[in-house]
Image 1: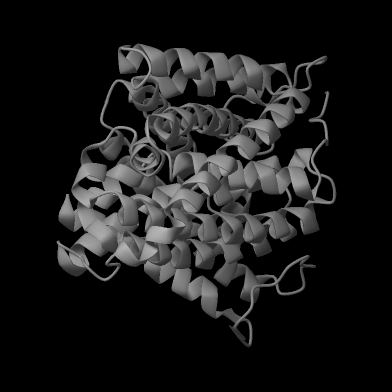
Image 2 (image 1 turned 30 degrees about the horizontal axis):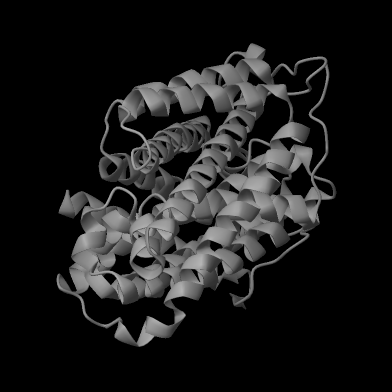
Length: 403
């Protein structure tokens, strides 16, 4: 049986993480979140970053223990040894992957509409199908595209920060028109922006020295993107009224228009197309690798045919096709806020299980060799894992109560 090709080093893994996080978040959900919380969007970004970092540390340690493409599934399986729990984890992550891909594909359509009058749903469908083909073609091509597109999207954010840096004093970052509830609600939506770090682990079988490389990539990706997020959020509300951003289908292009004129809007709108395309591609890659991993014969979750690797392309071709087509129904929901909310709920359920898995393994299998260990421990108890578990439960409760 052919195996996946190990092509990724630390730089490539970080670029994958940064590309996932940036494209899924700042370009896709900024307007929706700002419309909820106003200038205090900066506080919401910091809140989401804190919660993501807590669970990110748990992922980093677990990835150093079990560097497998099946990621979350194998962590929960090894910790609890109960099929129902690990199967729920796999289904939750797979659902989050396809739903998130649909949300970002819809964001692509929103930015494209600034250039040409096109129907959003068919465009999003075509984008997903095109990235499915690239995903099938091979990890080497996908990596080259990812590096190029990530560089372009980071450049777009740097442009926003640059043109607004002199106006930061205009932002009233503690002004929350909907109070603490609005700040938390926006933080919940922005949490969608951090989904990428959990998907980095699904590239473990295509990464060199994965027990060390993947944990480092998770931590560095979260750190880099948080700095960019906070500065871009501050820049956006400093230049454009939060109500205008909340109504915009292409919020960063609107910020660039105000700060740089029509040329700025055109440039940022074009960059956003690269960013959202990149995120759709990487989400397709990571979700198909998870599907490939949990379909291995030793798990018997899905038919083993989906764990087959193409002999020449060395990609899990059957898994790639299924994930591509499973994404399409969610595109027809049409509302990015609704789609992102569903993705977040799926993700938070998985985060609860992942944090619980780390806490369980600390006591049940302390002898396992770890390439990374979370900080802030009391004996075998990981304080960050406890905080990650509780904060994820809190966001789930908030989502259900506010629905």
